[in-house]
Image 1 (cartoon, rainbow, N blue to C red):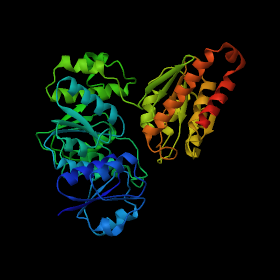
Image 2 (tube, rainbow, N blue to C red; image 1 turned 180 degrees about the vertical axis):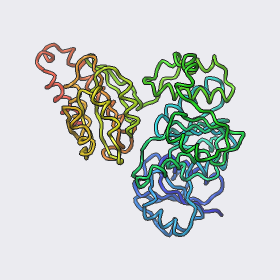
Image 3 (tube, rainbow, N blue to C red; image 1 turned 180 degrees about the horizontal axis):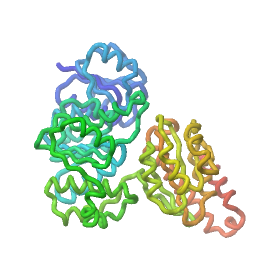
Image 4 (cartoon, rainbow, N blue to C red; image 1 turned 135 degrees about the vertical axis):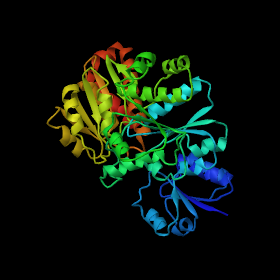
Length: 461
């Protein structure tokens, strides 16, 4: 019996385990950390052997194949041991693709993947196609394949996932952009990161389609040096201004010019699937956006709060800052990934009136902007960051939480980080509403005292 070891018991790892077991493989799951309760429950319910808070080398190295969580770097000792034994290491997407004949639409790029993937999925659903989203967002592809009820899958694909894909073939591949990101995983080598992104094209044929950003310098340079098989569909705001006029006015719920491009990619995919213009417009008009990407949270005293926790790199934050004409109180920071913040400096100089750095070590991002914007505040708690922002902002200002960094210093992931921001803002809003209904309290408490009382209440709970 084919033996498969799965490293990492998150959504993708457990999905892979369930699918592999269903297909008759002998499965063992290993996680160096504690396994979350819902995932552990699923493994126990299906009698899948597992371990947590350790990697037992003998059990893992006896496998015929290893499925690796994309978050595990190759420098990890257990991965090096697996490579030394020449045991194949694959991604969960690669495993799942072996067991489906569905139409695969792959979305990759440094920024915009999630919005574009969700928008494509929405357009296809509105058009009546039997489609589901999977991959780096939402449900794992393995779980979707196990359900066995969809004809189309829209896959958000990270560079880490693409590294572990070898035989999987996209029917439509979309490459949105390539800007510096995750260079800590690529030894600072941009060329390696670009190569990883272009793995989305492997195994594609002349009958498949490649939609890409024709104005991206890294994409253009790669295509000039490499011949590719799929039919090419270059997209740009400049070139496709007619489609912007025809369709973008229908897209009422997304902010920022960068979303024009995301919409154009989604429109192109819909057109390649022969979806008519009326249904495309209907889909655009009913799309509400995605959580954690320039997501409006609340208005407090005329100050708008936006959650952009998914902005884990410089380019994503650049797009967010460009989305507002109002003065911005910018909350940034987190786990630095070797970011080059110089691309943001001119924009911050003209758009940002104050900056708040949230993270365990804010030294690099603080140094990058200390001569650009004043004041800069430093904090390690979301409660304090929101309280500072509210004390600095004036009516009509925007408080933008767009970290430009990874979340792993204070949070498990960008979702937890964004949820924490939203919850904190809404708690402040609700506290203010409560105070407003008690005139004696309102007269007694200044804004500063309100912030302090909110922080104290939150620290208790």
